[in-house]
Image (cartoon, rainbow, N blue to C red; front, side, top):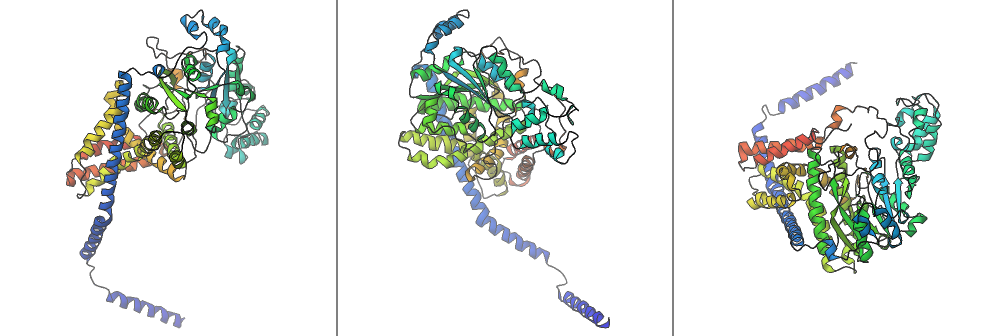
Length: 636
């Protein structure tokens, strides 16, 4: 005991001696000066040159985008001034008795039947995935197309895994809850949920049908009530079959390849071999009855044309500010970008729906591929590299629904930004090495379409407006020329805002929102280029059935046409959804960026005096508004 006490006292004495030898007073001012000097040296050697490089790159990319927007505007103005409509650039004649058929409503059916042999076989594909709110829209509209009934096949490709659609149940019982034995229905219910999770849909349906007569756990729907709601999409197809429509309901055992896989699988059926053309519509699209009569003639009379793309029109554009912003962006895309690509290069990106393809061109391009999440753009690029031409017909409009919740819109924009970047990486060498298209077409495809349109536009917006300008406030050595801060961005904005004149008063808010969305687009573009993380994530854009709530406006040419689809009645019983935790609805990346930008604005007001604070304050506020989920509508 005494020896251990001696050792302890010796250690204590040594510690006390060392403590006495320490400086009595730390010179904190000297330490701070050293750290400040090191920070200043690092800023001068690393930070300032890096930010200057970003300024130079950002200004260069901004000028590239400006040149592209001015070129597109000039082309579209020339097309309109010279009246170079598609039917004047390409041969267009009505097919068979279509001219007589459209002359009077009474003669329509007899005219189509009389000249049915002159009409080519057309396949109408409608891919679906858990489209419980809108599945009747496209099926009803497609079945009402003016075309001889024996010369058209409607093909519904149902990849649904949600029992809301397959079995009419509004909410699938939690898989985890079932596996833990918390379900009163026993092994059959657990087997059903497990099969659903693994994609074995038919086995799952069988298990649900064989469930005991007691009410399903947590759903308040008995098997008797359930039997009246089975197979909603299939029953809708059967209803139209009873009216004499040649409609096929197709399912597959898995979701391999997602939408591209479903479309590819749909082409393998024997009856497709008789078809020459394919019209494609997503589940929320409602083509007018004369859609085929106005588009197919371009393909019939011009053997070099592979694709006829039509314009999207939005039934819920005025629902909220989010949908108004989307309308502004998409109207510019269709009215200007698609028009310019069609007029000058006979190429543009296929929009995945509301278009008609020549089946021979799809086969020539190698068919549908699921290597990216933009299978439509992939097919279009490969087809144009084979020498095929595309035509955009802006006079033909197809009703559709815009995502009205920010969550759905953000997922959509991730796919639309990540997919093209990933596709560019996969095809950049193939484009340059191609021998079947002209040099200028390759330059347009490589530089204008991909690099400027899909890479620079998605990256420079965030880097320049949300990073470089705020950071420059903290660095007095960084000077951004006035033309790069004011003039060039203003011209770019005006060029893009002309697509929707009725929303011109929202242009400032729209620009601020686009800057907020650039945070997600740059992350998605980098993910696509690096092929990391969510590069192959496919999330179907949620539809709330807003088209169903739109009342037809019979006073204008853009009236919504509802065709015997019984939209006024609920599709299935609605049950109250589980509440989410309040913090789950916040978007923390937007909140963080918004706070940083506002702090930069405060520093500019107090110290920097560069005059950027007005922009920084309102841009930071825009990030916070989106971050706290005050954009779009709340899902029901």
